[in-house]
Each structure stands twice: as C-alpha cells, then as structure tokens.
Image: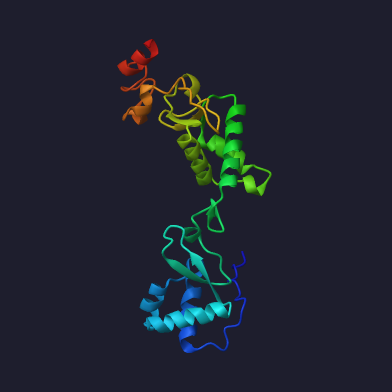
Length: 233
C-alpha cells in the first residue's frame, strides 16, 4: 500500500523572517487542528507583539488562514492553507462553513422516518437502519454507524421516534433482550402531539436487570410480577 503523501504547500514560504518561519512550521505541524496564538507563544517563546505581526504577515502572504473553533468561538485557530480544519474545529459532520447544516439533517431525518415506515417490523435496531444508509446510492445520504445513531437521537428528541429496550417478546422477538430498539411514535415531523406507543410503559425499559433477563432464567418475563401486571393492564 502506498504511503499517503502530505499536502504540498500552496504558496512559497521564501522571503519570510525567522519568527514567521518558526510560527509557520508550528502551524503546519498541527495540520488540521492548527495553532492558537497562545500555543505559538508557549512553543516558540516569541514575544506576543511579534507573534501578532508575524501572523498578520503570513495571512497576507496566503500561507495561513484563520478558522473559528465552533466549540469555543472565542478562540481562533490558524491553519496552513494546504490543510482543511478537523472536526474538532468545524463542529463535526453536521456543520458546513461554520454553520449547522439544517437542511441536510432534516433530509436525513425524513429518509430515516420513511425507512421505519416501510419496514414490516414495528421495532428495529440501529444496525438495521444503518444498513440502509450504508447502501445509499447517493454519497450525500451515506452515513456512518455513529452518524445514524445521531440522526435517530435527534428524532427521539423530536418525539418522532421512540427508543425502547427489547424484552425479547412479541414485536421484540427478533432482537436480543436489553438491546436498544427504535419505533415510530406516530407523530410526524412538523407539529402535532405524539401518540403513546403500545410499549411506552413496558416495565422492561426501566428495569435495571434487563440484561440478565432470559425466558428460562432466574429473572424472566414469565415470572416477573411487574411484566404480568402490565400484561393484565
């Protein structure tokens, strides 16, 4: 396998002074994270006024660029122009040009709801939903497993999707006991009240021993008084 080449600088660094060379070298070594003026001071021991002057000169020469930190907008990072800011600076996959990509998120949420509506099973696991996004024909619709989880969490906060733990019975028969599953609440995006799902009050969801519960075990749905009361109700 060929070794990935480091991006080549887009502008020549010839003709800059020693302070600028040291600062540019530090910034390039940080790649996508870049460096703050505080890091420049502590790493190079250059006086603050000289750092300010050097940074301004490097920016004017198009050797570095200023990038805001979306997690701490009061801190500025400076990157060499040949690098793209890392996720720690941009805010993650859901940001574009420093702003939350609301239209993309809403589009993916709609796709997720359509997938849940088409599935015959009333409850599904994260992996089932993820498999649809993984095979998406459009690159813009492809999601990682963690991104899929984030979209589902967003739908849970919207009260469009309900997160429940499997008890291994009825609708949960195809899943492991204690596994996190998702189901539609009956509420559509854009307003309206949610309908309580049939399993909204299942005691298994709040049981601290759900991971130990098995059909023939000491802890079992068949011997659980709380589960039986729920069935009778």
